[in-house]
Image (tube, rainbow, N blue to C red; front, side):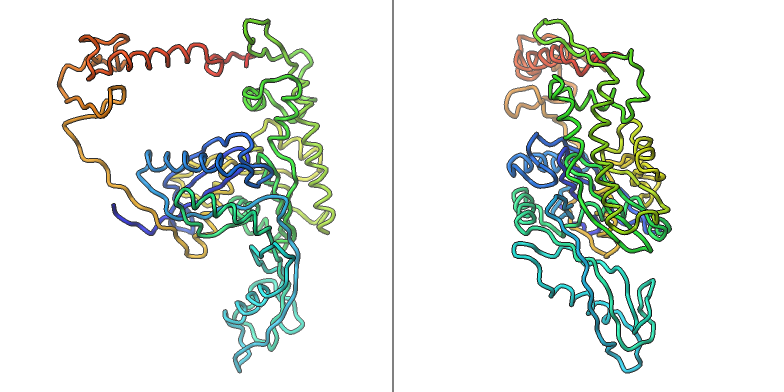
Length: 470
């Protein structure tokens, strides 16, 4: 195996799914997406951004890592992880340092010394500092709108966002990655990562709200004058909408598909006469649900989320000062007419954002959904710090004269050109075994697996959707 240190790996563990991206730095400060994998998490793996069942979430991460290894021949050794949850807090503190050199010129070491001093502040027991981000600098008595390096003065002071989290929650992340033999390069707040992926500097200057609509939470980040002014978490997300729909008698396995295919954020846009026919159970008559009723359920939960968002904007002190409006991202941003809902509800301009701003044009199709914003942001933050994570590039298999038969017994091999009992046409395999069920063609066991697979495809309701059927 050949070791390559030019890759960056990001793992976004969310309530609904686990996303893994591998990228590398490209020209113009952009990222090439080399590999991607999205795996649905089992129910109760995560809750509100926190790990609830470590065994289940480990299985999801393992599945995603195996997909990366199988499809792209890459093995992740180290990765950047996201952090979310109600336990995250954001406060701000101030401090100062004297300029260290006799000429009075502010240098990088002065700025770093001021930032490092913030790490010495006391935090509540059981909490740790995750990020320290500047809000504003002052040189002597003058406010500085940008980094003060190169300016002349005697005393450098500043206000900083101090972002803390519960140590026990972070320890769980490390335990999870340790079980899959992946080192944690760093943990980054989900809202910060998503904002980096979907915002430009002009938006940060004008003032903007990023709402990362996830499965268990909605992470909020407010920028103004290019500095973070607020970070917070709304404890509702897509799983709450699903729970509301399920309470109307919809099977859990159908809820997400019902929401995605027929759901709408504005019930006023849905006619009274549209109904969705649900699959029958044990030959009982099919049930129906009004599409307008479905939209009303979704809209009611979105009203709770938008009300909390408006309260956050008001309490931040930046109400009426956010000309950049609201940027919606995350998997929940794919909901039909959610942009129109938030625009009506908040009276602010709203944009749905996929993380395509800083991804190379050659690979942007791999992340052309708001679902990938956090993972792309993790890659960007790591790249901006000049950090990479080591991966192993697995050797591609050499051409062989023999090929493994996945339907055969044990490690039996059959040779090219030999009569194997399989059709030579593009259809693949015969429906029945030939040659008395010889082990080379999989025998009865192989035929049985393929036949059962066809039957499952026939009866699986997920494969037989019609316009008004689920």
